[in-house]
Amino acid sequence: MSTVKFTEEHEWIKVEGDTGTVGITPYAQEQLGDVVYVELPAVGKQVEKGKEMAVVESVKAASEVYAPVSGAIVAVNDKLAGEPATVNAEPMAGGWFVKIKLSKPDELNGLMDQAAYDKYVKGLH
Amino acid sequence: MRYLPLTDADRRTMLAKIGVPSVDSLFRDVPERARFGKIDLPDHLGELEVERAISAMAAKNLGTGRAPSFLGAGAYRHHVPSSVDHLIQRGEFLTSYTPYQPEVTQGTLEYLFEFQTQVALIADMDVANASMYDGATATAEAVMMANRVTRRSKAVLSGGLHPHYREIVATHAHFGGFTAEFLPPDPQGQESLLDRIDNQTSCVVVQNPGFFGHLRDYAALAQACQKAGALLIVAVAEIVSLGAVKPPGAMGADIVAAEGQSLGNALGFGGPYVGLFATREKYVRQMPGRLVGQTVDTDGRRGWVLTLSTREQHIRREKATSNICTNSGLCALAFTIHLTILGEAGFTRLADLNHATAVRLAERLSSVKGVEVVNDTFFNEFTVRLPKPATSVIDALADRGILGGVPVSRLYPKESALADLLLLAATETNTDADIDALVRALKEVL
Image 1 (cartoon, each protein chain N blue to C red):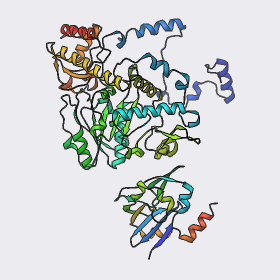
Image 2: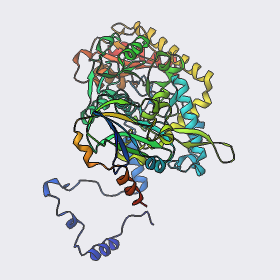
Image 3: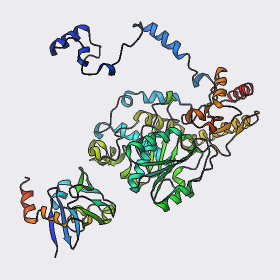
Image 4: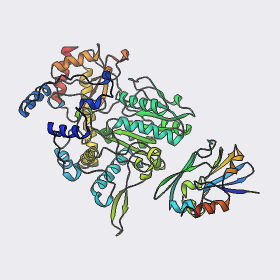
């Protein structure tokens, strides 16, 4: 069974076993506007919870994407290089950024579930 | 606002306002030993006297304009048509600022777009930026770009790369936390770089024509770099060479970093110059500097804008691809106007003329006893070996009113093995009488 968790920086992570797939939320892509470029880390790179992991660039701005958990990058979504707009079209599916092998699974406990994140986003307006 | 110095009355008013007795007392927190002592300057002079004093000082220079000159080594005297200076001094060009607002800066954006197009064409690359400071800083930026692209941090630099370019890269390596491996100076132009590449190498940097003048085809090196996942950076210090020589792009270079001074820009004691930077389209987002793109306005008319600005410092702050947030706009304009006046045929003819003059110079010099031409290949500059230290020969030639080239020891002062080597450049500005004078004087001083 998989769980989806969210960060206050608008990343999502879907965990299956010891690996989490990470992307940015529908709210984040909507705020950014049309995504034109995504800079992804190298496979094998160690990332740390809360530290910069990738960059997403839209017609309006370039924003850092932070690692929701610590661990090693085991896969990156190469498809985004040619079709960055996938981030807008399917932020929670085909527009994923990286897969992280979790080194500290307990970190997930500090993240929001869907209901908490929805409430958090509502509070931003 | 007045652009005039403060009067004593102004000073008194300001000091009284903030309650400070004197200007000096503002600096009392600076320790005495760190302050400037009394500077011994002469009293003020009238404009006429200043003009006389400065002219007398300037007359001590032996300028390239009033002596047969064979100076090169990274800065080349060429004939710049007077129309270039006239056009760049138009107020619309001379005083224009960074073209952030495309609706009011189409002229600036258009010439930068033309500049980029010319640079990409002569280097045979996909894309060029709107210029950098000079060839040396462009080369350092190229190395840092290669580090970003390959996510590696070891650069290998040829012994044929200009020593100044090497020093700028070394400075960035020191403070930027990457490794730069410098091969020893290569006056013979025969170094092998292939065995220096491994799976940690981010890039190999060569110069063509090399600092010592040699021309090489780096196609095999480009292939070896590609196989190892490294980038090949080709620096060009004399851009006129590209009118005659196979361009770096055709050899498989990933980045071209060049000095553009030769076109449109005066020697000017070393600056301001203009750096050229070109790369492959797939690396464009890692390219430093400004980029102008062509687009259409709301009525569908052709126009130009700064593009991919999100890479840059004014948007991305400390996360920018580089700290280059400007360009050598006016020098780039001079480059573009000069190259436009030449046209493709003129550029090729200019290059041929340079090479032919240098060949004549080399032939004449090899007939002088004690002078050995080192190069088998060259464009408009080559190295000769003299029977004694080159600096002494150059000084003796200068006493005879001739600028006889650049001793290699000027740039490599610690390499005693290079002390007898002299670099000589010949361009379209050198006449047969110049060459005669040099040969005559050399026979006297050797």
